[in-house]
Length: 358
Image (tube, rainbow, N blue to C red; front, side, top):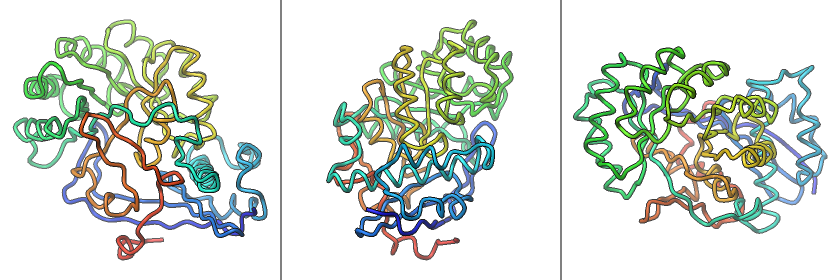
């Protein structure tokens, strides 16, 4: 089998309403899809936050066997010429995911089984609780109540955009409506300085927070250590980290209890499997961040992945129409990957044809 072509399809569509986290406002949804064609008619799909180096990197892989993922990863990752992080690594990540999609299709297996098949389903949390225009505490409570009504046993909300006092009021309000048995995570998206995060964490402890995600800038390793030393709320981090080398340094802080690697930007599936093994050896559990179509496969492949991130229709309704085999929730607070061979990224182009931008 040989690679014959690598190209990118970009889609973009507006959100029904803008949403915001602790630092950023989002008005649109995007799907950046990398496509690998082969001489045997098997097509692989990968995705990333942005894909800007596909032509440059892709042409070096034409004629190669797509099943040789380790060989091709090493061929693509040349920091001297492409850089170590950012857009170049995002492109490598998308290509690597597409290679694994091909591998799973050749094997006739869903990706999670090919990668190890640790479990067929995994508990999930709903990644909601964003800020929005006209969205106050009553609206936030109603949103969280809806998630619990679906059977969710865990929910996450954003903090960091308002004052600490105001966000603590939001956290308190959510805890009141979801009850004491539902896990509650908070995510600052790097909005705080370490001393602000310590203040927030210590005051939020009474609301039984399951984890405090990205309280400070992703590279502030000392900040993570300081927060961890001052609060018993576990720290989650890693969605902005890159390669096994970056995660090695993050692990070495001994401040992180839950790691959130994102295969779309940190090096793909080849790299996330290595990071998972490193984390497991250090007693750290995983909850991969981002694109649930592929990450639920990774969640179910790994013994130390404990809970999956799930984005609700409120975040992006069209995505459930865009995928041929969208991830769906089970009735028992778990989520399962599709049993269709591959990584779950095959799309319905007819649904997205009016939104293609590149």
